[in-house]
Length: 114
Image 1 (cartoon, rainbow, N blue to C red):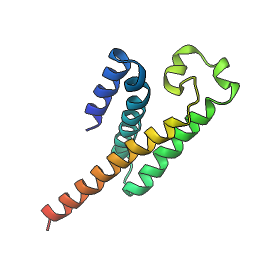
Image 2: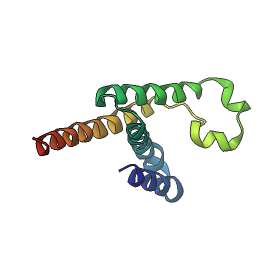
Image 3: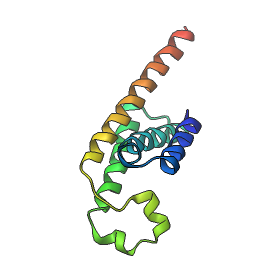
Image 4: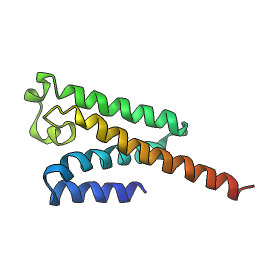
């Protein structure tokens, strides 16, 4: 799952523009971060979702501050440069999708182990 999200994110970053790159990219990036975090964390899906959302919000808020003027351009790829409150909606959509997928996957695994 994580590898698929990474490949999709790279594809969106390299080959798309406009709405797809800026908003669908934000949906995919939080799904990737959630998947990556899940590899290293045994927290509940809800706690993972809140953790990734908090991280994404911090990165987005940094874009309001003049900090981005002092960051190297290579780091701006990860932090972004323009604050957009609609990004929060994209983050919420991406995290809701991956959260429900994770919850359903865990239910399926528990049922198979009974």
